[in-house]
Structure formats: C-alpha cells, structure tokens
Image (cartoon, rainbow, N blue to C red):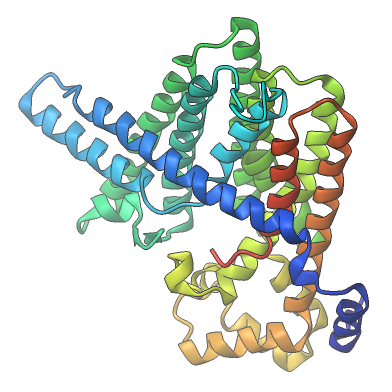
Length: 389
C-alpha cells in the first residue's frame, strides 16, 4: 500500500510552485471563452426549443397535452445553468482544423453548421442525465428536480418510466439535429459513427459503474478505469473527435486528441468527485452528501479506506451507502477524508492528469492547426480542475 503523508504532499506542492495556477493565463482565457460560448449556446438552444415545441405533436388532445408537458420539462432541463463543456469541445474540435482567413475577420467555414452539432450533443447529454439520475436515485440536478422526481408525483415507478421516455425522445432529437447540419456526407457519417459509438461505450461504462460493487473488491485502478470508461470517453473524447472529424483533421492529430481526452477526462471526473463531497451546494446545484450516502465509488473513498485506521474505517462504513446516516456522521467522514490525506491525494492526481492533458495539447502546435483552438484545449484542461461547479 502506498501511503501519502499529508506533510509530504504539502512539501511537494511548495516545491513545484502554485499548483492552483497550472496553465496560468491560458486557463483564465479558456474560462472566459467558455463563458462566452455558454451564452451563445444557450441562445441557440432556446431557439431550437421554440421551434420544436411549436410542432404540437399528438393524435389527440390528451396526447398533445402529455407531449407538451414532456417537451416543456425537457426544455427547462436542457436550459438549466451548465458548463456546456461537451458542446464546447465539439466546437473547438471542429475549429482545430479550420485556419483563420485573416486576423481581422476570423472567418471560419461552416461555423453556423457546427452549432447545430453542438446543440445535438447538448440534447444527447440531457437525455443521458435523465437516465443517470433515476439510476442514481438523485432528486436534484442543477438546483432543480430530476426528471423522475418531477414526474413521480407520489408514484416513483411512473416517474422512472417517464424519465426513460423523455430521455429516449430527447436522445433521438439530438441525433436528428446532428443530421440537420450541412457537412460533407462522408465526414458527417464518420462523425456520427464516432458519436454513436461514444454513447454506446458510455452505456458500458455506466453498467460498469453500477456493477462495480457487485463485481467484488475494487481499488484505485478500478476508479481510474471507470473514469476512463465513462467521463474520458463521453465528456472529452466523443465530442472532441466528433467535431474534429467534421473539421477534417488528420489521424496523427486524432491520436493526440485521444491521449488528451483520457488525461483531461479522468482529471475532470476526479474534480467532480471532490466537488461531490466538498463542493458548495449553492454553486454545484447538488447535495454535497449524496455521493457518500449513495455509496459512490470515488478515489477519495478508496484512499481513505486504505489509509484510515480501524476506528476511522468503522466511521466511514456507518455513512458510505447508508442513506439514513446523520449529518454529524457525514461531517466526521469528510474530516477523515482530509485527515488521512485522501482529499489531498485526489487533488494531486487531478492536477497531475490535467497537466498531462495540457502537455498533449501543446503537441498540437507542431501541426498546421488553429492556434485559438489549441489555446482553448490547453487552458481548459487545467481550468477544469480549478472550477467550483
């Protein structure tokens, strides 16, 4: 067992400099670009939903009313405050292969069409969140009711059924929107296959997550494998490569993007897990206790169990996966995560992997690619482990 001493970690941080500012200016620039992107993305999604909801589908007034309720909820869910990181990676993946015409105009080919693909990815993401939430039994998503909770109204089975139905509908709407984008057909089919295979692999990753406890004893490598199977492939690689393929990038670049996605995606999820326990609920929009009460397998939990003494392990066991644990018990476990060095270990691993992702992004500078996109990819890798949401 590898023991991470807290004093050693603090000394390590002091030697390598300010780890909270990895990426420096590029990280802050990427953050600002993402904020700007979110504003444009939200505006376009609102327009999409305005058109979609006006179609008034249904074969009777009863069905029309039901479909309207489904779409109204789906629209509200989709437009909740979000990082939009997946659609941003589609956009900047596409931009990577587009050379700026002039510094003044910065005219990019088919920019409007790639926004349709960005919309598609956001729709698909919303559908997967709806399914994920009822599997995890979460009742809050981005500060509001999850889909199964919204529709339950005293009947949890009905709520679950509606979460599946609404999620399935929005998933197909996403694929439909993807095909509405006007791109070279060969590239579009290749990108769509990339997207669909990515969602398929995400389902396998979700099944692995749900089965991990049943599969027997698990360790830190299992956690990294899980984050690779779910977050790295789904949040990073799938959208990034889908956009890059549409932009016409070469196979050499694809391999770099895969490595970038692996490191960046795992780092992203490690930070998500940290925020799931120590995040500000007002900022994250979800409970900071639910991951513990649901028995979520995270790096912090694994390391805490490795490094804790018997008394500490017993206290963790009284909370992890036990929905009726008290707030005092939960706070005690959070303290154990810090006292054992588990929290600092997870922070260190996230920042190390983010740095590795940034290194991969820098390799892109050896190619004749769009520097604005490279700057974003390098900067966003490090910003994603500094975020508070």
